[in-house]
Length: 129
View 1 (tube, helix red, strand yellow):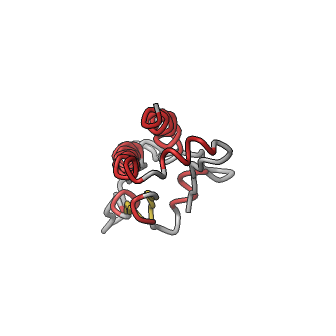
View 2 (spheres, one colour; view 1 turned 45 degrees about the vertical axis):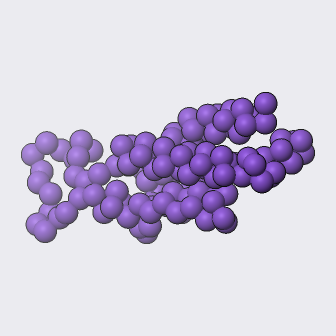
């Protein structure tokens, strides 16, 4: 499974301010909102089914049903609301994310994560001001 993570280290003042009881509910809301945003954006980017990579005259195999990777997405909020996870649970999810020597990487999780990371950190810093 693909793994991307944001950790706040080395900024003791920011961490102390965020861990105060007044701000904790706002931090949890920011974590939840960012997790939902990453999940929504990744659902738009996840590769689905029989598509452009096959010759135009071919047909999908009999009984083929696309979208298994897209349907396997789960999102969870854990650690008391301080941790959000977006996961795709298929055997080939990592191959689609990172690619192989014959299949280019699709980065359906990395792109939303990278775009949301900056917003997430700026919202947390905004709570401290």
